[in-house]
Length: 380
Image (cartoon, rainbow, N blue to C red; front, side, top):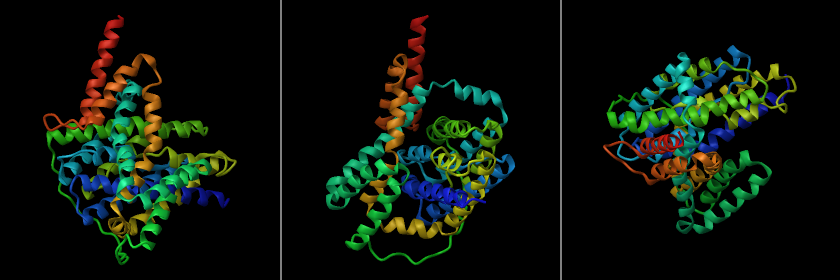
């Protein structure tokens, strides 16, 4: 076996985990999760990813790489007025919807009918808040933040996938050396905490439905595209259904949704991994092993993030989503005939509007689809 197989898998796992863990923690904080509940969620989602990635890669003999839904967690982090039990209820509903999508092809086709421009407008409206908050960290601590921003844009010229991780590691080290961090927590093994879900109409409509749409449109479809671009021909149903099943099983422990990966998958599916495409599936077990380690030490990792400066966490989260924002805006505005619906979706989602207890992402999608319907009605 080529050494490039485990190396690619471990790099993909470290980049994916380190560059977006801040968003997981921000989502937990937005719904009022305790540190114990946050650690449980990180542990559960890492376990879910390890098992589903191992099973799918072995079963399909393809490098099926999974990840947590970064845009979905950004949606949760940008929400307000929801509790952790309500979030768990929303995660369960989202898992059920993903399982149903995997089992019933008409649901997949229905999802495909939502224009990419409107879905991307919703995604851009969700993540733009994080980009703005990253900029707002500059006056809070310019001597720490400005060099990190400069480092991010310089490093991404050489290796974009490592740029956020470099900012996290470099920023954490700088914060520690300059006395911005208190005493580091003692290492501890992770535990799972069961959280009783609460199902409310506002959480189902305001969190679960947008989370499902964002996960499908910006994660699962992209993940399938990466596999196809690498020369594989995956059957979408089983892949989506399995990730939905493990999302459903891990949700009661505070875990967000899992899905097919795109960026991490790109690292594990190219010819640099192995010249023979039939051998690349072996990255899956090594990727799963890395996330098993993350699961074991999830509590310690969450505790370390808890003592880091909040400005650094906000910066890392914003920088991690910058590429997603740029890509979403490009897709949203690409089709001239759909620019207005996409723009309306973006504006309403970014506004943070809450109406009848339902969050902005849902209303942004409704507004965008309504404008799109009127535009198409006019053309008839």
